[in-house]
Image (cartoon, rainbow, N blue to C red; front, side, top):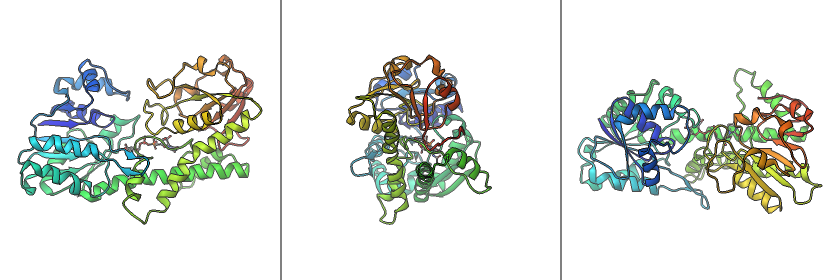
Length: 417
Ligand code: SAJ
């Protein structure tokens, strides 16, 4: 079939290429002409394991453009960020996608909304726009099929994960099932469109609440003088306990955003909001740990290792590093950032040695694999302090190199993940 994929981001591009590789004629559409031009020059706009190899295999059936073409299927995978000041979903890109599609929409064409949206969006916002095509409602096929692949392992999960398809009607679901079956090895479960929208948000909210619990445990453990990493490791030996990992805060365009899509549309969300509050307070807690390390130093320099929102990705959206840097600057500290994965960031990025020059404390924020292999003896600093918010370094090795090591949530044990 001929398929338009609107939005060539972390979800849209891999989806477009998987469909192209499985034999569909795919037109990848993005309003960002720079992204389209870089794809035309065989350059991928972001890193994701296996994506380059897939691109080489798929490109004979794939064209990147800034405008749509007539097709049987239109997949919407555009960003749905949060309006940060009011914590409400910004659905302008979904509206724009609908406005781009309806002039091309013909009877029996299928529209798939993959973007994460508040429950009710497909029927209340997108469907009325698609009806501008003058098609009758039962001539329009519309489903919501949320993507649940995890950044950093997207392609493997896109193929292996089970998939939910919420449809306006049976015909819509059946057509979508055929499309996804071309690359999905997982099971495909059917439901109504609003339930599918809700399921996606519940998945990410479940994770946010559980990360908040792990973060709260790490703060309580500091009060108790317990090593949270060892305690979590042992608690998870229980057959029905799976405590997640404490961290410096929750970033990414999903987990830190999606819970608000539920709470903004309901007056009954209390735990959801509290979890967001706990996770968004972690940067302040991290800063209090660093402050303890540098309190005797006038105008200290801090080296932030890892500005991505998590390990082994180049994505800095909603990264906790931004809040930590802003808080540090407001204390009058100098901040130098180093991240082996991130190419562009709103703060200057240094290479590792430059980032630690004259520095008084290294602060590990993203758990990049590269940081586990650093040889601390090579680091020349003013004061040899390191705060590891991810418990990824070999504490003994760093201590032997003269570093004062603090693992967030850790006490005197050297448990590592
Ligand atoms: N984090 C912790 N502790 C943990 C796990 C994560 O602090 O134990 C932090 C990470 O450092 C990061 C943030 O939470 O800052 C989110 O990272 P993540 O790996 O939990 O999730 P994402 O945002 O990369 O991907 C999530 C996934 N959702 C779930 O696992 C339920 C993925 O499956 C979704 O497809 C994706 O959101 C999405 O796009 O919705």
